[in-house]
Image 1 (spheres, one colour):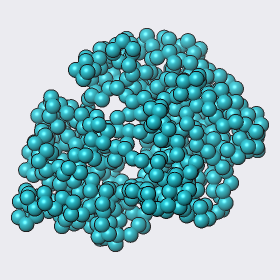
Image 2 (cartoon, rainbow, N blue to C red):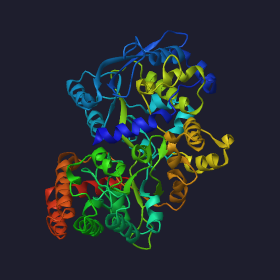
Image 3 (cartoon, rainbow, N blue to C red):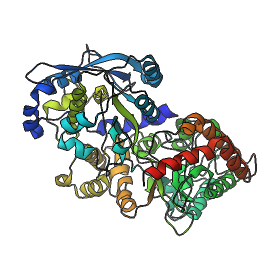
Image 4 (spheres, helix red, strand yellow):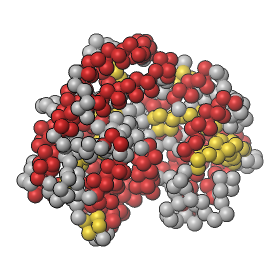
Length: 547
């Protein structure tokens, strides 16, 4: 599942990311002041790392991870030579990082998860970056990494020391409900605003079979519906519609935090899913189908409703456009709610990976220089520096050369929802700000001008697309963020996987009507005994220190 969703996200959206390198003009005075440290004018400094070999990266002829146009550009532009201690396929990369940490033979910098960051900090194997970051990070970098108010940077702090650079991304990644609007019109159904509306639509799609398949269902669900990696065909947003949330820490109303998985609202949502299953509104084989397999029912007109991330149209296009013609019409809607209170879309912190620097690294400033270059790339690239995104010919050819860049962070906040729908509706390029916006605008306009292959981008960025829904969600704060942002607690590290496995087992049995919904109450008690109470105690001890 993980590979499927990441593949979709990369394939559909990677080409729109702003990953060109930047000019040094904005920071010219600073660069002149520390030429010696950066290596410019005084020789080149070298930093080592490790790299995942992604299936979507295709090297130009004669290039590889040892010698390529991107590494050459870093050496030429900022005086930092990048080398790899090793390269591994993405499927094996994380395991090899574990082995590298265990061996103690660390590269100068490399990516780790939150647990590894904590372990490396406690083992005194990585560098306190506070001083080197304050000295070498540009004003642009410091502003870029604190757009969220500094929360993501705090996750890399231990005893007020910056122990890593967070691999940031936008935490405001909401889920939406996607519905076949051509079927809504055909059956004279209202747009979904409440869970009651959603159920009515699901039943109508099942009983009236607008796709004419003879075997329709109401809602598409796949085998890992509660996994964060399941960007489409998941159930996290369904839970949110009942004011229930998947594995986040929320306020208990008494000054403490509780885990969302054991709250009574979850039981209500599971009861609704069980009722849908009994009515035949859910594919009875969902528990053994990955997202792509379940999506085949969408492509073939068997299902007309699915929860998904903002990029979901990039998957829906496989069924929506056939032989150059749009044969399915879809609409994106905010998560329906079970009552008069708006549904809150659960979100994370926008960081789950960190770049750490070995305590033995001779030139930690080189890592910060790479960070500065990458961030500037996203804001003011030059034509020459498109090499960082496309390779030596500086042209888009589907090679995803941006994946070679050894240190990448994403923008924590964007204004795509305010800018893109308006720009596309009015064909106004003057208000476009980022490279991402310009790329999306160009794709959406291709659809407007008859290129149906760009249907998906129009549904994402167009006047009534996914992004057009985001400003209202932001303005009304219709989201709930995980309140715990520390490294995994001891019990969490030891018992979390066991608890999640048990949870999924019980949730699935309830949904598939194999046990009574009251089994949820037994699960709550078992969850507490299996480590949940100890984990909750540790989380609240951490929470007290952050108030």
